[in-house]
Length: 351
Image (cartoon, rainbow, N blue to C red; front, side, top):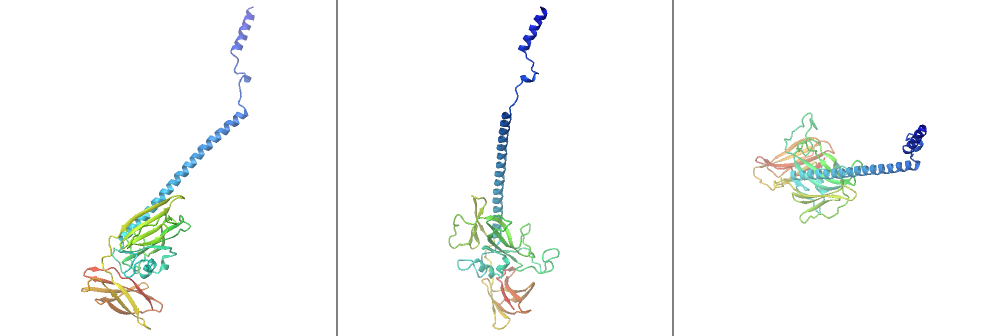
């Protein structure tokens, strides 16, 4: 009887508390459930990855646009600063850029061949920036053009800006290029440096303007596409347009005025060759004081520079010496007391 009761108690315990270690009492995971979980996990991972990539690309695009704006602003400030230092803007002593005289005429009137500018595009600015440092007769050792006279002109730098199609290493569609000596780190100009042509200042310049820049008379509007200048004597209104993205044009407008002005008189030189000879009659006009003024005529043949006249007259005759085919270039300055005028325009003739 006691054995029977014990058996009943054991049977009741088995029914109430089954043995969970028995494998067939556990429920397993089906293949469908496993595949579903895998697909959901993959979708979530893909969405997170897509979000990360999109955010990264947007961040890079924002950084790229900011960099283009920064580059354009730096170029804009650089050009504005050179305008402030110039004593002539889009003009020489006897040629001024206007509707009847192009900027190319101004450049060639200075004696600078247009071919020296490289494959130039649309000319926008011509500047003459005085060199304030001492001009050596011979460039010092260890520097550019050591042992030779400084490249001409030595007392000022001729700077030309143009806009043309961007090269393969620059952002399209256009770039602004510069011709002239490269300034030193402190902004000064080394007269012994050779001018550099086709020096890229900034790229991503727009191909078209979204509006016509205002340039009322007597201003002369020069340039095209995304780089234009309204020149009013010694004041320049600059207009830049940068193609910084597929849908955005960044605009910069500002006015820069020369600190020097063109108040100091400058001689205007002309040269006439006597028929059938190598004798040249050089004459110049001078709007400043005549008394106590000394005029000096400089001759440059290749790298050789010499003074061929000094006195109070407004003319002199020179003879083209040397080998046939050599180019002789002349310019004149006027000195009144301790003040010497800027150099005149250059007259070049070939023997």
